[in-house]
Image (cartoon, rainbow, N blue to C red; front, side, top):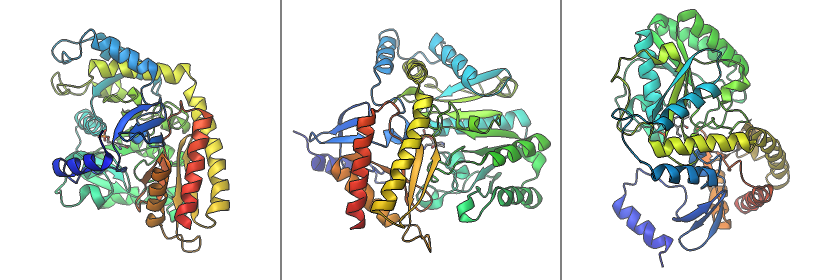
Length: 428
Ligand code: PMP
């Protein structure tokens, strides 16, 4: 029988260390919110493959749709012989995305590719080079998206130079002393010092910072950015790759604000575990590039399209938007209670939108010094007790919750009880 230790040794010899794994165990099989390793240990999965599994591992509808598609064809390349599932998924995404205007959708394979293409499209449409992103934003690991990502360690370390014409403004974080006003003032200063506004193609941000710590964008921030974009002819892009597809209780997290972006990037939970991503946007903007200017061999793979249509159907028929909102409220209350009882003055913040929740740990409430060590310890103890967790945040001192929205109340409570026990272990 295989062991985790033997596989770990093989992995270390064969796979570069730059690809890190949060858990030192190897997957055997998984179902909805549960996963078993090769030694037969069972885990509750609060990581969801980094926010990919809002509909759970192997959702029956997703698996059935993918298998049915595999029995017909698995690849033609949409650029050689097109197929209906790509068109059907584009139609569905155009209908779901906010905005009372004609929309079109480009399908690609990964989130980084979606962001790269959103920038290409914005540049081609505006004929301008500049892109403005925010501190702590995460947009991918390819060189353009890495340039837009606002965190050095570990992503940007030693791999520059990055593409030019990428500018950065501070993300508003009231508890860190940066108000929406401060953030907008810094952006206006950027227009005076470095970024000529009529040479800026797009402003991009995540509606809830993902890797950056699950900080939601305040509604007034979205409103201010929309006004600035309209004033200068800049396109507004919402990077919904982590926050989209019911995680926050809406199809797209920006919908909570009522502000309508010009372009949306999406990936992850749109297809319940299959690699596919997209750029959804205003039809006139999306049509900026000439034929051949967009695409890629695998973009919009038919099996992934079929899976995405089924995952979207599951979100609709199983009421997962409402489920996310309810789950967010109950988990928030549970964490508040747990923090007060088990870790007084260490759980500094419980934040997020809907079921996109994070809890942040500090050494004490007076100094509010980020406690990455405590966070690591909670995650390690949780794994030993059978719960998979992931951290986030600029200082790695928050734990984010991405549990499948299809998980039963009993499984979620079992996971939260393990979280509480792990927190006790780590504090002791
Ligand atoms: N944008 C956001 C907001 C993300 O969370 C991620 C992935 N964590 C990406 C872009 C990049 O996606 P991928 O890893 O599929 O390239």
